[in-house]
Length: 103
Image: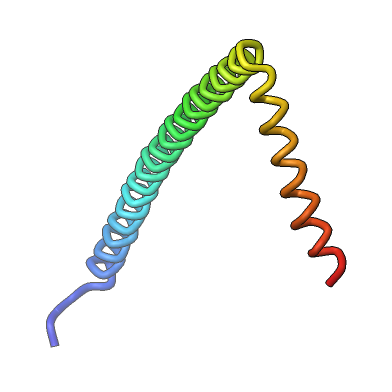
């Protein structure tokens, strides 16, 4: 057996306790920083996704608005064709819709 004194053991134990406390503190700081970084990354990704959805919705609204204006212009220039197309569409809906309700 070595000639270790109780004072040496107590000093070693106190040093070990201090080292564990420092390690715990360092690890907590590391986890806190990583969590903040992850939160910022998620927040940025959500902001980018929100912006893309907003841009896409705006583009879709522009396309629908343009198609609506084109349809209005076509109907104004060719009212007879528009009426005939509407009649044919109504006829098909009546034929196919009526046969479905009889089954």
